[in-house]
Structure formats: structure tokens, C-alpha cells
Length: 218
Image 1 (cartoon, one colour):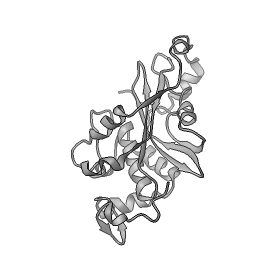
Image 2 (tube, rainbow, N blue to C red):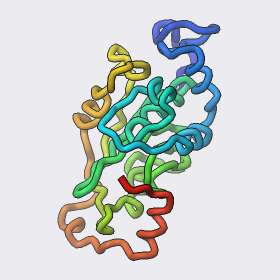
Image 3 (cartoon, rainbow, N blue to C red):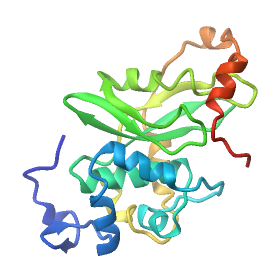
């Protein structure tokens, strides 16, 4: 899954012997410094969460120093890419709730994820999951709406953002709506049969309050 051996000269502008994918030297260095998924997650966690109808590129998020779920995932994918991983995203699709987007990575054949979220349980996952279904299911109990309803229903196949390089998803000054459009169009796989989903109990109060730690009202 690593990019070792690839001709990186075809992937972006050259900077100090490396491909910088069109990023400014300052932003390229900032992302290169986030050498592990844990470091990427800590950086994203430190960004204030914004509620806005935007789809900022990673370079724009680095400048504004804030972002929401999608923008955090895009930034994480960019950081993974400049450190040798493919820029993969996965969509978690919900009912009566917002979808969630996570950047996914693979180490020693196992999947993990990085995410920006207002909810405590919808962020980082260590690379311990054998399949993407296992990874998606790890979000199920913590994925609920303000009525305490468990809302996660499906997950998408991995979306490789290299497909959007011609749209400058890493550096555009305009919102890169091409990214969520690609996620929406990707094949999704159900996690819960409809009959089972209709019978799901609401979350208990203690679990609800624990998952809301750090949540800020829109």
C-alpha cells in the first residue's frame, strides 16, 4: 500500500527532492511532520470544529486552522499521502443523522482510521481491523443522534482521492465538492438488516453523556 518505488515526479511539483502535490512548501512541511496516524489525529483534534456548508481543501484548512468532519478527513488523507500512504476516504452513512467521513489507512495488513468529529467516539481507530466492515462496525455504538437513536447503517468502499488530482483537491481555493460527490456515488454496503434496525433500542443515558464529551452546540 505504500508509494515506495513510484515515480513521484508525475504526482506533483517537486520540492527538495520530494513531490509536494502542489502544496506550498510551508504546508508540505507541516504535513510531512505528521509522520504517524496518531500525530495526524492529534493535529486534527486541535483544530476548532466549524459548522459551515463548505468543503475546504487541506491547504485551505491549514490556513484557516479550523474545519468540520469532511475537511478533517481530507486533511488527514493529504497528510497520509505525503507520508507514503494512499489518500483513502470511507463514508459512513446514517439515517436521521449526518453521514461521517473518515480517512483510512492500512498497517501490517490491518485497517485503522482518522476522523474529525464533535462526538468523542467517532474519531481515531488504531489499525487492528481485518476488514473495512469490522472498522465500520467499531463506530456503531458511538454513532447516535441527539434523540439517542443508533443511526449508522452502511459504509462505502474505499475512495482513492488520487482520482481527483486533476480537480486539485489538496490545494484548491474553492470548495472541493467533487470529494463528497465521489463518496456519495461510491458503492455502499449495509451493516444492519432493516428489520433489526427498526427494533434497535435507544442508547442508555450514561453512554449518551459519555459520547457527548467535548460536543459543542451548533
